[in-house]
Amino acid sequence: MPKELKTKEIVISLKNIRNQFGDHVLHNELNLDIRKGEVIGIVGGSGTGKSVLMRTIVGLNEKAAGEIVILDKNVDDVSFKELTQLRQRMGVLFQDGALFSSLTVSQNIEAVIKEHTKLPSTLVREIAALKISLAGLPFDAGDKYPSELSGGMRKRAGIARALALDPDILFLDEPTAGLDPIGASQFDQLIASLQESLGLTVVMITHDLDSLHAICNRIGVLLDKKIKVDTINNLTKEPDPWIKEYFGGPRGRAATRSHK
Image (cartoon, rainbow, N blue to C red; front, side):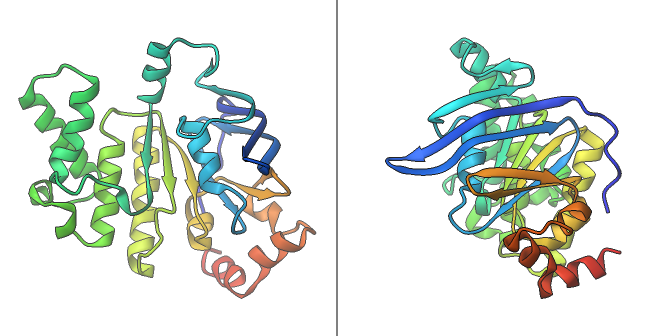
C-alpha cells in the first residue's frame, strides 16, 4: 500500500467540466482536485471517457465548458507562451509508449529536449542517457528503435521521454496494459520509485486493480458523467452497483487479499 499523503496542496483543479462530441456528453459538471505528490488512479466503465479526461487536462482535447487550473494557472487566462511553459511541466505516457518509430529511444527523448531548449547537443545526449537510466532501461537501449524493444521496454522508453523536461506532473494512460503480471508489478514499482525520488504527481488511467492497490493514494471513479474520488478502502464500501462489482468482484477480492 502507498504511504499516506500528508499534503493537501492542489496542483490540478477541474471545475464544472463538460466534455462532449456532437450531442454525446461524456462528462458534465465534473469536479476534481488532484493533490501535490499523490498517485491518483482514474477508473470507469467502457465509454466513460477516461482517456478523454486525461487529454482534456493536458490540452489535447478542448473542453466544452468549465475551468481547469494547473499549478495555480487558469489555462484559459494565460498567454500562449505561458501555456506552452505550463505544458512543459507535464509529461505524458500514452498507451504502448507512442514513440516515433523512425527514431531511436535516445533520439525520441532528445527530440523533446531540442524542441523546448537550446542546450548543446552533448548535454542533450547526456540528459537522454540519464532519463533512460531512470526508466530502468539498460544503457544500450538508447540506440535501439521501438520495433526492437519488448512491450515493457517500450513503455519504459515512453516514461523516459515523458520525463525529458523534468515535469512536475506525470500522466499515464493504461501503463500496465499488455504486460504480464511480473512486468506489471515491476512497472508499478518503477512508478512508485520515480514518484518518491522526483516528487512527482501522477495521474494514472488504468483498469489494473493490482496497480490501484499497490501505488494509488486515491481513486477517481467516473460515474454518471461525473467523478467520485476516495481511497480504495472507502470505495469498497460504496453502495453503487458498478463500484461494488468492480472492487468486490472476483478480481477485486483477489487484488485486495494480495495487498493486505
